Structure formats: C-alpha cells, structure tokens
Amino acid sequence: MNWPRHPRFRSVRPDAAGRHVSWAGIDPRIGVVLVWISARLVEGRRRMREEPDAGYSTETVLVTALLVVAALVVIAIIVVKITDKANSINLG
Image (cartoon, rainbow, N blue to C red):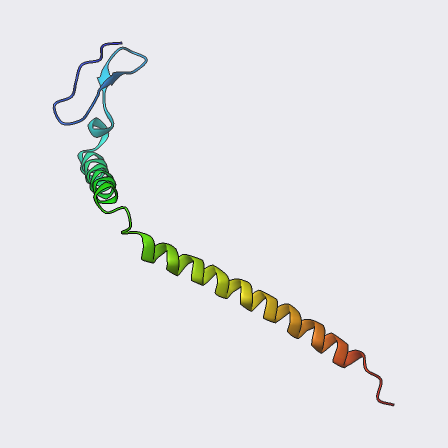
C-alpha cells in the first residue's frame, strides 16, 4: 500500500473509516516522547556499532551480581541444613 508520508513521522496509515491518522495525531506530547525514544535507540545502536566492547563492564557487573546471589542462596541452604541437624541432636 502507498500510504502518504507524514512530514514529521515515518508513516500515516488509514483507519477503518479511511481517514489518515498517526500516533502523533492523538496527542502532541506522545509524538514528542516517541521521537525522543526513537532518537535514543538510534544513538544507542550507533554507539554499539562504533564501540562493540562498551557494554563489557555492564556485563561483568551483572554476571558478578548473579554469582553473588547464587552464593547467598547456597549459604542459606547450608545454614538451614546445619540448623536442622543441630536441632535434631538429642542431648538428654
């Protein structure tokens, strides 16, 4: 389909009644937010292409955090088992 182009956004599509509407036509503030989000995504993709190792430190932090959580879970399991075993000892 050949939809007419909106001067500010990529495309305008006809609704069920055949009128041409766009997301930006609903409320101008939504259009501004969508343009801002789109610009941020484009800029992020550009930076990722230029600096492929830029996210390495973030990945390292996430992996380290997951390992810390796993270690805490293992320690909690061990503490529960030791406590249960200590409580089951009959001293009398």
